[in-house]
Every structure is written in structure tokens, then in C-alpha cells.
Image (cartoon, rainbow over all chains, first blue to last red; front, side, top):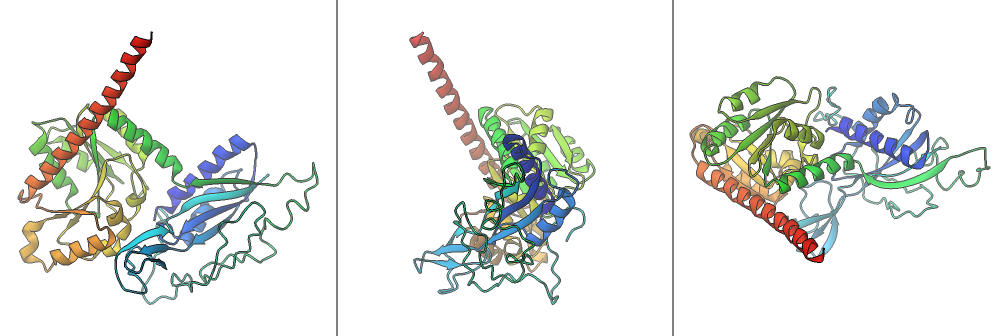
Amino acid sequence: MHEMSLTEGVVRILEDQAAEHGFTRVKTVWLEIGELSTVVPESMEFCFDAVARGNPLTAEAKLEIIRVPGAAWCMDCSKPVHVTSRVDLCPDCGGAKLTVTSGEEMRIKEMEVE
Amino acid sequence: MCTVCGCGDAKVDGHAHSHDHGHDEDHDHHHGHSHDHSHDHPHGHTYHHHDHDSDKDIHYGRGIAGVHVPGMSQKRIVQIEKDILSHNDDFAGRNRTWLAEHGVFALNLVSSPGSGKTTLLCRTAEALKSRYAIAVIEGDQQTSFDADRIRATGIPAIQVNTGKGCHLDAHMVESAIAKLAVADDSVLFIENVGNLVCPAAFDLGEAYKVAILSVTEGEDKPLKYPDMFHAASMMILNKTDLLPHTDFDVERCIGFARRVNPDIVVLQLSARTGEGFDEWLAWINEGRKRALAHKVALLEKKLAAARSSIEQG
């Protein structure tokens, strides 16, 4: 979904950062993308290729995606469990009383610049 | 993948697909990596075609500091920890502040195409226009048909064509609010692009997202598009007049929606016949009252600050 706009958002943030920190080229960008986020990493990579190449700041930039696993707290089991989507049930008790605790990230973590 | 917006990874059932969401959960990412992190978290997931141990990769732990000779290389790491949507969220925050200060109750209507959003809005506008000011922002990829339909009811409407975009973003809405000259103490409806996927992630500054699902669609949509039903505060089941002609299972659908979002409010109505409409109008009215009360509180705060400034002066 909408990875193109998100990727444009990434490049815009990099431009702001370039102005702030005074660098001219981004070598690598690390994104944290949660397993439960609305982003498909492959799409993001595809779009990044399209968007980044046209910009001198990011023309040679490499995109690295760090996938953050989905995790939730099961209220019935009183323990953290792994989930891969919002509609998952607790893998142990099969219950639906889950509160997502991580995996929704869509974040630029850091970058290597020069 | 959608070649227009870059949406999604089009999965064909039965197709071998390189990424495996059920990746075995052994990988312990060292996500809390500190500054000298060696980026060698053992990604066990098979979908990932980056080989982190490849020499082609640039690793934090190797090189940089080691090879750095002043004047020779200026490579450095900048940690930013910024949400990808932060730019949109900044605009959304500004919209929300503006709406609060002006006592405007704003709703973001999301659904798949053809669920009856515009018919719902036309009937709502007819029912409420004598009571208070209403304005509509219409989002579509192309044409101004929807805005024309709204304007025909005598309500100010602005059409935002997203062109190739699959959703409205907060910046578009900011421009639309300014152009539309949204009245104080009014109700603003933002009809998003018909799409149950992308608009879920984009905050526009609205009070609530309202997801509209018609009974001619599948009752399993809340499970198929969980992000949207998770993001929405209300689900409207529209076209209930057609229920006798479909095998749509209302209770099952509500169960699915609650599984994704236990707090979701559900209304059943028909925008065509008006059945169930009173409850919808009452809900809008309550929301508008809350928006007004919030505006009054903000004004009182300002007033108190001004008074105390007189006393001090």
C-alpha cells in the first residue's frame, strides 16, 4: 500500500536532515518496518529505487530494512506472544484478547552519510 | 504491485512468493543496538534478500571509524529515529489544532469504492443543513462528480483529485480547508478516496475515521482489511434495505470488526431509505457538541490568560 508516498516521505526527511546536518550524499538508510505495519518491504524497496535515483542526495543510497517482529500481550495468558497480523489469535490459548506491543514501526532509524 | 501507486505486494494465491511471513521466529534482532552496533543481527526471515554478512554491505562495526582518515573520508552515521509519516503527521497536527480552535467536528469517511459514502453524505447534508454549517472535502483520483452531487444539496464542497495518489494526505486537507473557508462550529466531512488500504495510515487531523461497509460487500472485509477497521472508530453498515436480498451475516461481520477493533462503534443504516439514520445524526450531533465544548475550554483558557495579563500589567 501507498509505499510510493511513504518513500517520498523518507526522501523528504533525508533532505531535511541534509540541510540540518550538512551532508550531501546518503550512502545507506536503515528503516525499521514492523511486521504489523502497513508496509510491504519489497514494495518499499521497489519504490525507493524509483524515487531515490532521481535525487542527487539519494542517487546512490542503499536501503536496508530492519524487520521488527509483531508482538502482543495476551491478557488471558498474561504473557507476551508473537503475532504476524492484527487478526491473529493467541498462538497458545487461541484467545482474541491481545494488545499489540510492537511491530507497528515505520521509522527511519539512522543513515550513513557523507 | 499496483503500478500506479506502488501499492501492495500483489499476492496470487498458490503462487510461490519469496517472502514468508511465517518466518520462523528464531531471529533475535538486536534492535536495541547502541552506537557501535555491528549490524549483524541474524535475520532468519527468508523474504529478506539483503545479505547482511555480504562484503558489499556497509557495516557499522567494520570500517568507518577504522578506515577514517581525516580529510579522506567524511562518512558518518546520523541517527534520526524519525517516523516515516512524521511529515504527514505534522500537517495533521496543525489541522487538528485549527479544527479545535474553530470548533469544527471533522470526520474522515473511508470505505471501498461503491459503499455509498456520497449518498450517505448527501442525505446527511440534507438532514443537517438547516441546523448548522456543514462542509465536505471530496477525495477522488479523478472527476468532480462527487463534489457536484454534494453541491447540489446546497452544501459547500471541494473536490481534491489525488491524480495517481490512492489516499488523501494531511497537506491536501489543509489546503482544502483553507480554500473551502470552513465555517466555525461546523461539521466537516472528508470523504477519502475509495480504498480500504492506504487511507488507514494517513492521519488527516480528523476527530474520527468512519469506515463504511455496505451489505452487498463481503462480511469478511474487516478481516481482509484489518488496518482500516483497526484505525476506524466507527463502522457503518450501509444499504441495510438490501439485506433481505443478500446472504450478508450482520452478526458475523460485527464479530470480525470487533476482533480487529474491540472498541469500534457499529451503526446499521440505509442511506437510500433513511432507515437507522436518526442514530447516525445523533452521533454527529454529540460529536459536534464535544468539539464545541473543547473550543469553549480553549477560549476560556485564552481569556483567563488575557485577564491575568491585565492584572499583572
